Structure formats: C-alpha cells, structure tokens
Amino acid sequence: MVKVGIVGGTGYTGVELLRLLAQHPQAEVVVITSRSEAGLAVADMYPNLRGHYDGLAFSVPDTKTLGACDVVFFATPHGVAHALAGRSCWRRAPR
Image 1 (cartoon, rainbow, N blue to C red):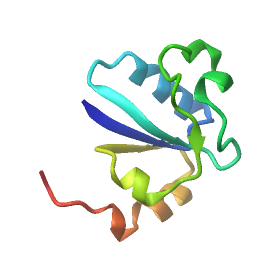
Image 2 (tube, helix red, strand yellow):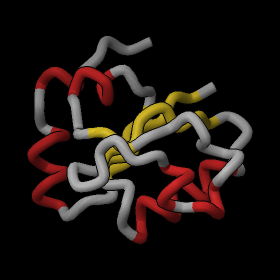
Image 3 (tube, rainbow, N blue to C red):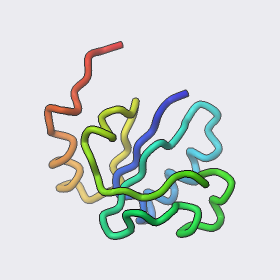
C-alpha cells in the first residue's frame, strides 16, 4: 500500500485527488492538510466521500508527518509547494 499525503486538500484539485485516490486499490491517504480547516473530518466536509475517509481529518502541514508518506501531492499555488517541497527534511534514503 502506498502512503499518500495531500497538501491543500480543500480546493478543487485536492478534492479531485481524494475522489480519484478513493478508487485506487494501492493508495491510502494518510494525511491531508488545510490550515483553515484543521481538525475537521474529511467526511464532514465532503459527504460524498463518506466510507472512504472516515478516520481522516485535515491537519496543519507538518514536514515530519508528510515526510513519512511515500508520495505527497501539492494541491496548492506553486509558491506554497516550492516552499514546502524544498526543505531538506523531506529527502529520504532510496528504498
């Protein structure tokens, strides 16, 4: 199972990622971020995704949590993505 993180999960791109990944047999969304919606359950914001993300809630972006993911999607403006993705704590040793 591929552990997935989504940064900026409340916009159009983030919601589409959630919808697509809910159908992917090898993907598990383990973290989704939104500064403005931190603490809110994904299923409460998007009732159409109930049953797929019932235990997942929005959180504030945290490089340690996101760094534990196998893949991270940035559904943010490029400036935000560039600022977070460029941090050295993201770099992991190859498998």
